[in-house]
Length: 403
Image (cartoon, rainbow, N blue to C red):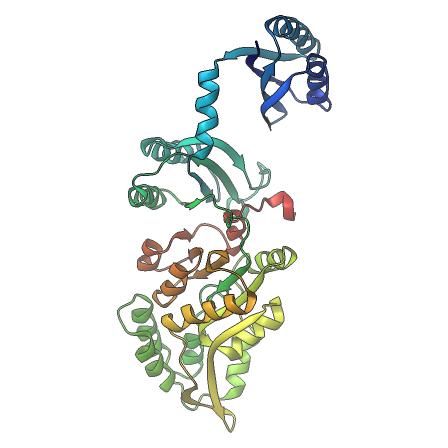
């Protein structure tokens, strides 16, 4: 009669340990039902679930493997597993699975305790914990640090709104971000990333800078802030702001376009996405004049924005064609997915304002980046502690994959 045995091995890691142990096991015609290995700071933790053909074989195997482990400087523990326990474990593979991503400049024990406490409270089990960020130098400045830990959890989630609210409360209490998403086939198979432009891909609101150059900065900023908070209809506020720019010279527009300040992490993010085969798009309530500059600079595939009308070298205060508002942004994303022959689940949308919410909610992964409170609370995910390249962690990219 077969015996099921869990072998738990630990000790100082060095090349060849797994090979030596499994070579020894191979003499007993043992089937490996499960295997897992992790190394933390040169400390090995290796688990093997063994299907041993007979009791006599298990006795001889345990004795020989125990002596071999001692010789290799390892500690080994054998635990018998009943068929009932094994059957329960097999059935658990049908459970729903989720990914919790904890990111910030640094991660403390308190952060882990808070996040794992919420996971436990909602009766989910942590299966795997993995660090996605690079190894941190003790001498690195805090503002240069990036830290990310990913939890793979399983179980049946009964209160997703409650769980998300609990995670949101933690992010308010500490300077960290927490993302929660289903571990579906699409998670590592996104194909398109769509960015808002102003205050997302670049650090400024271009229309505010144009207004400053034209001497109407304060009036336009007041309208902009009200619109981004969702207090004004975007189309009406946009038309009103644009009318104040009438007479602005093309030379001043060009000066602003030549000095667009990219958001921290934008170049690293987009260059990595391009290497991974993603398509990228700017879908903005700003202007194509500036979107096309970024397209050339970063290699963006698509630009959809408002066309700033200029006649005889100056801004007319009007926009050509349909104004790109929140509703239009969502429509544009649908049009791109049809052209690229992908599903909406394969889209990542990134934005900061209320007019970005339709596209954030439409996309498979919607990310509020440095967003206004109403957007942060409504979007599926939010990042405020890291640069744009923090998005790479949400799709499972490790720093070592890039650097």
